[in-house]
View 1 (cartoon, rainbow, N blue to C red):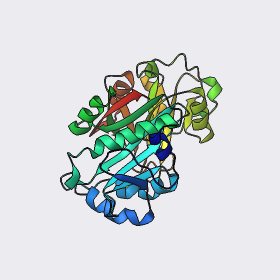
View 2 (view 1 turned 60 degrees about the vertical axis):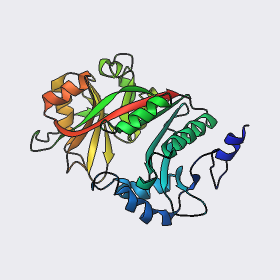
View 3 (view 1 turned 90 degrees about the vertical axis):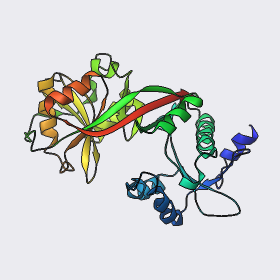
Amino acid sequence: MTMLSSMICMPTTMMTINNLFHLRPVRPADREPIVGWCNLLWDGQEDYIGEVWDAWLAEGNLFVGTLPPAADPVALLRLRMPSASEAWFGGLRVHPDLHGRGGGRQLITTAVAWAHERGATSLGYMTETANERMHYLGKMMGFTRLGSISWARITADVLPPAMAAVQHDPSLIDLERTPNLAAQQGRYISDWTVRRLTRERLSRHAARSELLINASATAWLILEADPPRARYLTHAEGSVSEIRALVAHGLNLPNTEHGILCPAWDNAPLQQVCGEIGFVDSTEYYSLFERPV
């Protein structure tokens, strides 16, 4: 094990060599200062960090950076393992007074080492398409842009809710015959990460009643709940009319008061389907990046 590896495996602190920040696990008291300066990053637009803080804290693998001897948190990094082979980082934030000093590069280097230690073969992240700094940094650190997504929304005033006969048995689905998924390199957006849709994941969605299959088993979709705001149409297969019927059924479900959102992969069939059904572009655009570990 290398010096870097041993440091990253430590349970109470993480350090990288010759870098700006001292990295440690987040503490509840870090919330107020981090949310405060995060809200200065986007030209006065409130950062979502405050909204997701409690969930991220409970999940673990959330780290902050300090500048010793000062103890104030001035950087943030969230690390995840969506599967045994896929790692993901997000929530990367650096205090605005420290931009341009190599802190972002350090955080990504830490993420790569963390993923390697856990046996991941890939590391990914998602950032706003307008975030040129993260695009440039990703390219410099070996990431390839997989594509981009456009968030679209549909509500009950556009598509009236209508009950349909649905089933949830994942064995009815042949993942080898999924043209929409194939157009997205076998990937889909789930829980704010880019993942490969596997038989195991399909079964997990079914167990949570997120997998909706029509009566003839010729169309299906995945609706992930994000209470209390909305649900996410993370993938769908079938004709436009069949998917429309399943979406209309989904609008009857709890947590759809604000409609159904779809992170549609740009220039892919599912994006066209969403447009024909009546989803409206929400003007939120994200780019997807990945690199081997």
